[in-house]
Image (cartoon, rainbow, N blue to C red; front, side, top):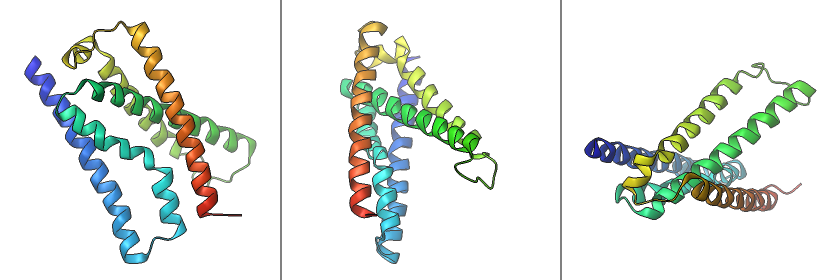
Length: 171
């Protein structure tokens, strides 16, 4: 069982690293060949949270204790951001503030992302996963620390994104 868990953790680590390299490599490719326009820079800034996948993947691969904490914090931030985005889109669709040509069909995809983030949070919350990283704290102790850290990261990231977007795209 321990071997299977190690293989699973390594697959997650490698997947996160490959995702980051491909995702940001694509934007860098477009930026180099077509210029770093405002839209590309806005995308890089607004999706900057995915850069945390690089240290997460390295830490997971080497089974570092801090990687467990950073993984949960990162995916809780992504979960909160996706949940806020879904509620904002539902509100905008219901209020008629936006005209969605697809009739909100992107909500299914957004919900699938939410489920994926929830699955990863649940997976890393399992006792067997915590023990493999040397985490022995009870749920009530580590959960609030991770959620508080995620909330702080989310608020700081949101503020930083707003500042950078206002600099890159002034009114």
